[in-house]
Image 1 (tube, rainbow, N blue to C red):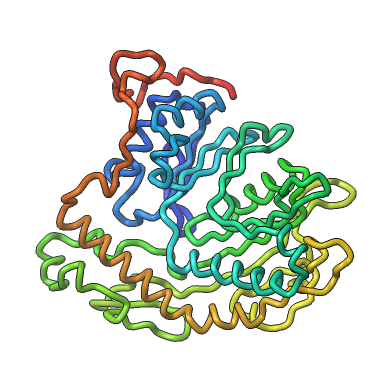
Image 2 (spheres, rainbow, N blue to C red):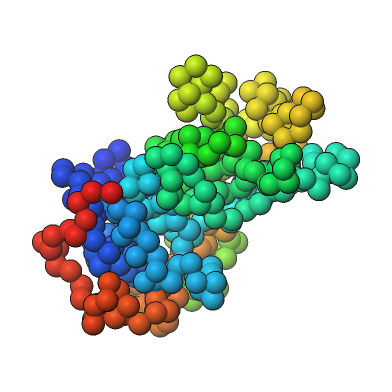
Length: 380
């Protein structure tokens, strides 16, 4: 993730080294978002255009930011990237589009739940929903004002007929483990209903850096890439079961590994913590006591304690992972060709606000703030 501030490179990851954190005003947020979204400027170096953006912003300026860009406008639904606003941390995290590896993991877990819930009586099935891409904004306490879209949520109807989120799945490839933990804390401490958060952290070794970012135009042309329309997963050689994927002797996806953790609240301290053992993602198709305990039907249906077995679903995911790696490699290569040869349709890359620019804070025009402009908000 890219955070506003002086960025540096540590442990193969771009991080923010913000010596004096400050809150950004709305104009700064919009300017930095547009710079990140377009792929231009210092917030999105050409080595890696898959990192998200983190902005330090007060809740009031976050609301103004959303209003100006029309994020909550139903007519603009789906155009803005997935984001999380954590009120307790005063951070807005904007994510890039998820990869095929990420999305297929979501689908795998969703299939597991659908299969398990399909064995329940119909009247019980009708009280359970497995949902994706649904915004949640009813957080409590210091998290009030936060907004989050879970990768997957299991909602169960309570005795009063209200559907409550009980189980959350968060998956990260480009997201850091720290970001996933913050998400788990938001769900567990910011709601009164979520009992278990399943974190799936995917690792890529080496971390992705565009393999042609430091090539001159002459060197790039010498590689003789076909047109981007002719790039597909069949172009790539994948070593081993889980990568790396190469093309033109360049690495487009590193070797994939990962792990699964289950998080809940400690019964005494009420702090968010890991429950049970960390599970190797590449062994998730094998029987596991931690998986059986926290993927239990008791989390959803009182009185039913048998585990929900995901073994066969994870086995299918792992068998197909090589294909997903190829899809991701092809997507990255096509993006590289687009970026190298120029963008012919800027609307593919930039989210344009539906409202007039003079709607921001009653100003007559929108001006890009200078890097040294003071923030208008110094506290949440």
